[in-house]
Structures are given as structure tokens and as C-alpha cells.
Image (tube, rainbow, N blue to C red; front, side, top):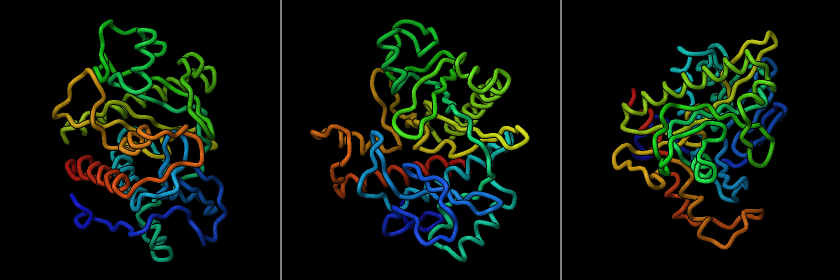
Amino acid sequence: MNIDSLPFPLPVEPLLEVKGLPYPLVASGKVRDVFDLGDALLMVASDRVSAFDVIMNEGLAGKGVLLTQISLYWFARAAAITQHHLVDEHAARIVELGKIHPELQHRSMIVKKLKPLPIEAVARGYLSGSGWKVYQETGKLFEYGLPQGLQDSSQLPKPLFTPTTKVASGHDMPIDCADAAKLIGEELFQRVHDLSIALYQMGVERAEAANLILADTKFEFGLDEAGELYLIDEILTPDSSRYWPREGYAPGGAQPSFDKQFVRDYLESLDWDKTPPPPALPEAVLAGTLERYIEAYSTIVSNNE
């Protein structure tokens, strides 16, 4: 799928900062800015690109649109498993927003005001990334014992839940399930655990239909004033998940992926200490990364509709 065949427009120039809104800015992350609408929050996905917790000077025009549209696709399907943060009549409210701020229509979600839990819920079905590094050192996946002889990108005997702490900046750190349960309460922890595995399985099944492997993913949850649990933030996007093509999959090394790994690989080739200021990203790297996000949308969404 190319840009012209997408069911929504992508901007020509990257949106790096949301300006001119009459709403208070309540939070700004590496990618998303959150504004207070009064009865709800406006979550806008910018085109900022971060790597190694550093925001690059260049943006990726349309990245925020693609991430938002992938999330909306998954939230619609996740509703069969759990309630989520999108407000009632979300589509209609987004259309109204687009009449006033057309540049925000396809990159925004209007969401309930909820209190995020202080953990991120990570579900893993394959041994990769930080999990592979830990296994090499300890023979375990954090607190879980694993068979000997697994390789980089090996499938795990069963999906595992490996929560992390949630921090405003820097790296989230792994936390044992027992400590996570102490942090948020045993009953709530068990619900988060079970929902995370169920949502991961939903993603696995739909990824298989698109000839993909969903290696791992992270979810975030929040509570309303009554203590009701909701799925929040983004869901099953290339930024929060590790997708691999099923064709050509072979344990024993890193697999091709549909995310900003293309940027990371370029940065790893430089003599850069991974602290600000970041080096410049060449146009070829930006173009190659955007192609991967478009391919991710096409493969995940279009092949499952």
C-alpha cells in the first residue's frame, strides 16, 4: 500500500508541536500531547520520532496519523474483551473536531479522564529484546524459569506477563509480579494480568490472519473515580508492539520488524552516545521508516478488514 491508497490523508510536513489550541496542555510525551477539553481529554499523536529516549530533531510526516488509526482499529476489537478510554460517540466528536482543526482529525483520540496505573503491562510470546538479553545472562525471563537452549526470537512455551514500572522519563524497569501486585493491589493486578494475556491473544490471532507474528506488546490501564478499570493510551501499534513477518521467520537472530528499529539501526552505526543533542537523520532513513509504518498499517488493518 502506498500513501495515495490510504483511506486518510497524510501530511506533507511533520507535525512536531501542536499549536494554537484553546485547551490547556496537561501532558506532553515523546509522541503524544494531551489537552483538557473539560469533560474529556484530547490525545494528539504528533510526528515526533524518539530513539533511545531522545527525541530526534526531524519528524516523520504522518506517523501520528498511522499510529492513531491502528489504535482505533484495535480499540474497536478490544471492546469485546474490556472497556477502553474512548468517549461515547467518539467518531462523531472527532468529525466535529476536524471541522475546526482539520490537521488533527486523523491523529486524535478523545478519551475519558482516568488515572493511569503506575505499571505498564507487557505480554510476551517470544524471546526478544530485553527479554533475550536477560535470558542470556540468567537462563530466565525475568522471574520466569525457561527451558535451556532457547535462541534469540524463539517462541516461549506460553505467553508470559512481565510488568514494568512506569516512569515519566528514561527507561521503564522490569518489576516482579509480586511487587506489581503490592503496588496496585492483588485483585487489580490479577485483572490486569488476565486482560493483558487475553488482549495479546486477540492480537496474535489477528496478526496470524495477516501472516504476521506478534512477538510482544505493552498495554496501559487506568481507573475512573469509581475504581473501574479501562484500557488506555495506544494499543497494538508498531510503537508499542513487536511485529515480525511470518514468512522467513527463523529463531537464532533478530527478525525484521515494522517499527522505528530502522532509525535505531542507523543511529547504532554512528559514534553517538545516545544523549542529546541527537544527530541528524538523513532523508533516506526517514523515508524508509515511514514506509515501514505504512506497511504496518496496511498489513495489520487492511488485511484484517
